[in-house]
Length: 478
Image (cartoon, rainbow, N blue to C red; front, side, top):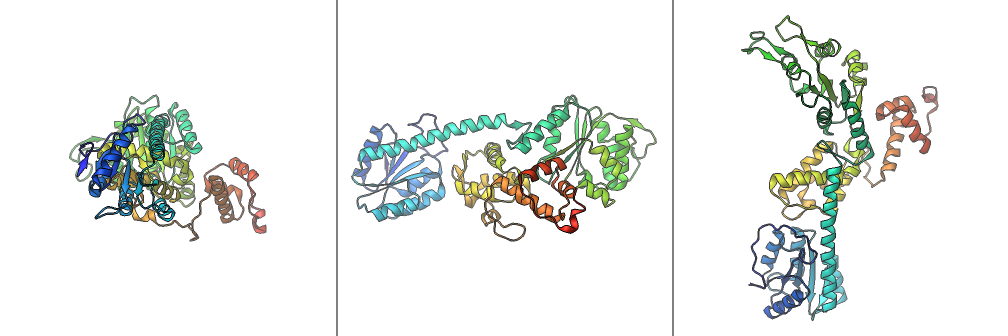
């Protein structure tokens, strides 16, 4: 049985006004009490939904029709405490006020421990109820205004499809703007999943050649013969299956940009051909003696340490120096944890539109789990987590059960010790100490491993007390 207001259950769009943005649901098995409470709440300026059925109230919560429920403790089939547990499971951001005619301090504390917003004795104190409703309404209005500000901030901090407010990412954006003005080769380095291709596309979009074509090639996805044909083109009959003459990506993007992803995966023979493109600005189609002149901007990306690859003989030194004259390093996600809330908001907006959802955000415990995760897959992993959670979430907030099972376990460090929360400055200090220990105090080598210049390392060490340098390594310290 339901009374007061008859409503359908489609997903609601949250109104802007403070009072009307909060629609209370009153749940009581006594019709007389229900009518009295409805009149009281309506007199306070709210438009309540009334029901005697706990299951109907749960459906209202599930479909987002109400964000506050006033529930009686004693109801047949499902008491107020059981309703509280199930309602918060459906929507962890829900506010539930428990009402009872048998008030005790112990029962009030138990209700609050289980997540109740308030515990009111009957007959209901009008002043106290109004204060509680007004506080919750003000809270939702505040959250609405915060979301509006966050949406504006997201627009301001978006750089051609990349978002970030951390100093490391702002430095990347600034350097990319400077580099884009000049038609030169660029090497983008960083772990897998950090967004190297997005940075390459951004550089092309803001470059003088932005009206020309951008060609993208994943060098790790093809064998040498196919990669050569893809990049340089081929003549008809030059190999089995070559039924027609085709231009390669370098010709396709002439006067534009070619992006070579995972260039560190190419063979030495292919590297020699790429070097010729950079040095002479010329190519030859497979099976053709004709040399063709081209003018392209080459942007390469790798997740490998190309200096190490050069020392190991797996990457040409001359090609490395040609590519790395301008180098942009993309930080891993664990180096920019302060960007996680912004990235979450960005991906929620994206997948709300993709899946026709209206998810407002994450619960506090879900946010805590994301901040504690080590993110080996970086931003790509975070996007996959938000994408899958957006599909499984049934309420307005993504909660812990919506996240992948691996994220719900307490993280551990690489050494096996239990993870503990640290300030970002402390994380930096610990990491620098470990790298210096690994390099036996050799600061030049430590700077190379950390991916920073010696000057930056010296600046960090000036503020942080470095570990004791082993005597055998002092002679080698830079």
